[in-house]
Amino acid sequence: MSSTTTTQGRRAPLVVLLTGQAMASMDTSIAAVAAPTIRLDLAGPPALAQLVLAGYTLAFAVLVVTGARLGSRHGPARVFLLGLTGFTVASLACGLAPGPVMLVGARVVQGAMAALMVPQVLALIQATYLGAARGRAIGAYSLILALGVAAGQVAGGLLVTLDAGGLAWRTAFLVNVPVGAVLLVAGRRTLAAVPTAAVRPAALDLPGVLLLAAAMLALVTPAVLGRDLGWPDWSTPAGVAAGVIGVGVFLRHENRVIRGGGTPLLDVAVLTRAGVPAGLLAACLVMGCYAGFLFTLTLRLQEGLGFTALAAGLAFLPYAAGFALCGLAVSRLPARLRDALPLLGPPLLAAVVLLVAMLTRHGWPWLPGSLLLLVGGAAHAAGFTPLVDRLATALPTGAATAFSALISTGTLLAAVLGVAVIGGLHLARPDTPAAALVTAVLLATAPVAAGRCARALRQPTGPSCAATDPGSSSVAAPAAVSDLER
Image (cartoon, rainbow, N blue to C red; front, side, top):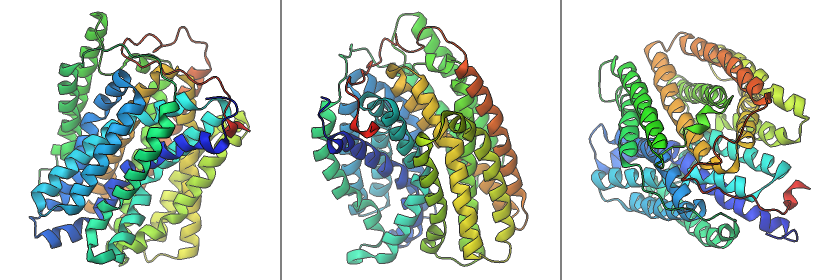
């Protein structure tokens, strides 16, 4: 792209990428709000609501790293558009599903297509923007990544409540179709201009795919389905233990592939970069606690205080506003203050969680509750957005797809486990502050990991950890400085 490219032309790729990311992020909570209506309309078994949610989540979790590798092999723009096409068609199939079997199958395909699309977003942002413009683009990416669940809850409640054309729950899926069609037209034009180096074809690491799929299924399945299907209480910790062991086996396999001169499924060298594991841990702690807090607050408002799904979603809007305001302002702050935010945000969010738990014991006073959630959203952005920004900009461009897969997988697993652990504690002891206390304790550990990340990233490092990844696309950033930087 030339330096004369218009600001609108430079913004167009970001709009396409972030809208695609938003569709994938929102679709879990949109379906969650619509699930009770789906079960009644289709006269499905009691497990239908859970399967509609789990089919998407499991397919996404299992395949997102594979999607990242396919982006490295075939080019992130091409794979993004392929995933977007499949996601749009699967959404149409969901909206037209005549029965439970087709709906669940379409949801699995939708999750698989999201896994193709999502890992390419950060790689394409890295390839398109430079300097301050890249920081702002990554801040907007973090905003969508973090708030997709809350936005989907509001959108799902609104769509189901409006019941446009008598379609009820079907509009929650059909809304993706016109949006996806517009994105495909815009994406084919705008993303084609993103420069990428030639990709050397390499065989897909199928044993790695199977090992990682088994590990992800062990981690996620008991947490997503166990409680609703009546599995024993020990199934979730057992699944987590089996999944962790499986991930360890997968990482050892990937190292063997690298030593043998092959192309690994995941560029595990990204995890050897000083500061990256600690930074990922801090980001996942914040996201897991956020998911648990959102789940428990929604339950409290709906089941304890009689709110409708739409009213509960609207009550959470100040949180989204606080996150947006802080998240978009991060890149404009002085570097010293920006670097301090991941240390200050999580403890502030912990305080908000405890105060909200006290506030909702006997009702929901809208003004103080909304102000608290506004502060909580800003604290969440402070603990998450600059951390992702710093990690993304510290890594070489060729590692963007691998990092995107790691942050997508990590935050998804953290959200699932946060709902399982914190939500499960709330369901077991709804009249006690136990869930809020555990959330606050976990948030208090996030600054420790964030501090270790910051110290490690300040240290001088050797050669790029991922510059020689034999299967990476080695995306090259354009030479022109974006108009967004002005």
